[in-house]
Amino acid sequence: MSQGRWFDIDSPDWGKALAGLEHDVYHLPGYAALEAHRMGGEARLFVYDERNLRFLLPLVLRPIDDSDKFDAISPYGYPGPIVSSGARANFIERASRALIDALSDLRLVSAFVRMHPLLSPDPDHLDVAGTLVKHGQTVSIDLRQPEDVMWTAIRAGHRTEIRHSSEKGLAFFADPAWSKLDEFLSLYTATMKRLSAADEYFFDRAYFTGLRGLPAAQIQLACVTHEETLLAAGVFTEVEGLVQYHLSASQQIDRRLQPTKLLLDQVRRWAAGQGHHTLHLGGGVGGRKDGLFGFKAGFSKSRHDFFTWRLVPDATAYERLCASTGVEAGLGFFPAYRQKPL
Image 1: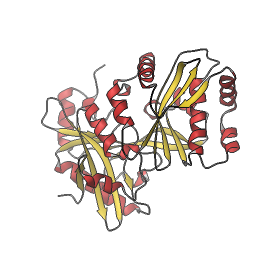
Image 2 (image 1 turned 30 degrees about the vertical axis):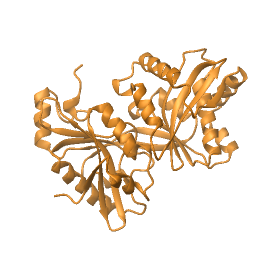
Image 3 (image 1 turned 135 degrees about the horizontal axis):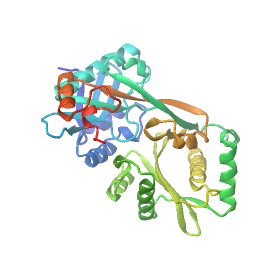
């Protein structure tokens, strides 16, 4: 049996396990519950302790169709493992092996983990228990810098477009009451359809209302309007000074107006004024160096590697599932047996 422990979302020990560890919204039980409901699974937290050191990882356990087996996936975002400050490589390696044992104890075939680019431990310490895949980089802004330093770090073209948008009457406002939620949801759905986004990027109203009500986090809806028309809006999360650019949407308008650039610049200013230390903008779709990454990269030169961690505690069952679905194990998609046919 493993030395690790599992907690479900109803356990007060989930919140207690986070105490003293630098964490994000993705590690909270309420967030994991939202994701589990959305994905038709069950949220669990894996915890491994040694003396004053701790390793933890939230997962959503899902049944595998036409099988008596289960697998696990990270909640949406960056919920990868976090560890106590000062944890050394040998502790992380032991915790990783204990995780494999704990997954086996629950008869899980595989686990797909999205690492946290800022908070997860060195990937080199995790490869004893699985495969690390680097997908690209993410972008962050250090909000502790002076305002003039942050502003001049923004790409010149971005700065010009931000000024132009302001001069043309685009206005930013924070919406703590979420009065624009329905307008945002309509805009968000239209944006995802326009971009031909994958199903995982579509969220219903219940998801957003659940997100807004999360305890232990501040969830902000921020908007850019012009003459009462919502042009862009985004959901930003904040936990212990770390602000995440979670989701956003925008209208298709004159290319010379850039409401999302104005939105991010104003959120940056707001977050710095609140005393937060970091605004994490994330990366491209799937971590790729695409147009979305290039857009975000125009706000800062700070980069962070983004990895996924792929674990297979039951290799025999994994190979059998791949064979039964007619896919070859080892291809890029993971777990391969969940790949949708073209």
